[in-house]
Image 1: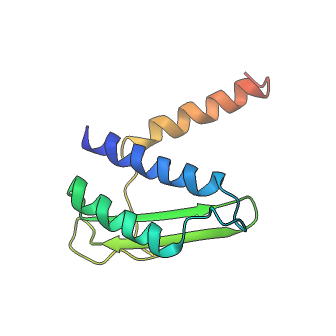
Image 2: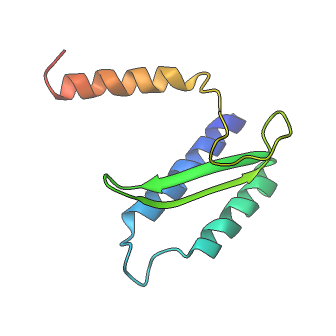
Length: 103
């Protein structure tokens, strides 16, 4: 259940960031995103997190906070195991294939 809450929160952050206009006044500032992630780490008792928001052609925002399972700081090069996420990736690939009438 903890992982589902984390993923839901991260996806909510990604969606809210990507749905707002990058150049408008409603864009969430970097400091607000940073504070949100710090609050998320504390509330959900998460050791660390890495988030990236991007469009088709450019990176909008990225941030890494905290430490990995091995007590090492998380950065741009930190490798994460995808564990059960492969099921979701496979399901997405199948849905995209069905949408394109390949299956």
